Length: 212
Image (cartoon, rainbow, N blue to C red; front, side, top):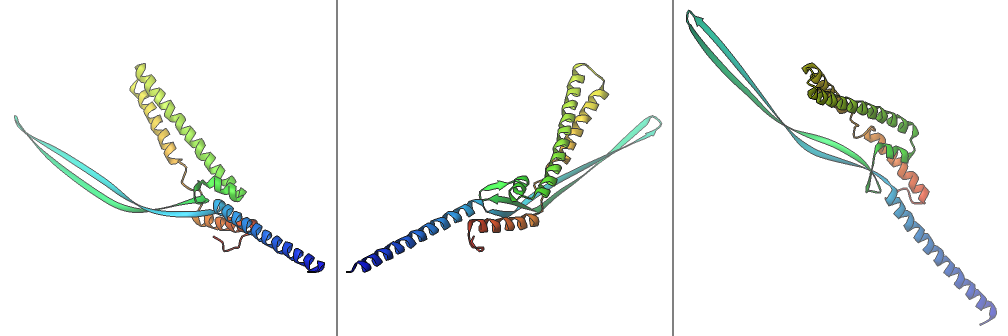
């Protein structure tokens, strides 16, 4: 075998080996990109559950009538009781945002991740207002409890103790009406942003657009 043939075979061998190594590297990189996508992609999961609500109402009417005739008095009492039992099954639709199929994201975490600063600022403001209102409610509750306990200990008038009780109840109402909702966002908005985020992530990782 001539020297030229030997050199040609060696070059061919190195060329094939280099291509195989490059193919292995590309396959490894593709596999790593697929894993990264699965661990970071966003999904919106909806759940439906049935809640059986039962309500009972009871009303009692006591009617007493007295008749007086000279030295005799006669009384009659009518007692009427009405009861109403009501049962209603409600379907509740819930939805959640997951990262990588495992970690549940709050609205604030989701907006931070997708980079929607305008919506994030709005939701943060709404949550801050609710938190301030709940803090005020807690102050009312604490003040009411202190007034009731202090009033009872100092033998204060019933109006002061009643005022403390009403203050405490008002605090509970303030907290109840300013409870943070499950979501500040609408599910269709969330789904649109999830699709945009996942598509951008595929492009970033060099994956095909239809990879799931």
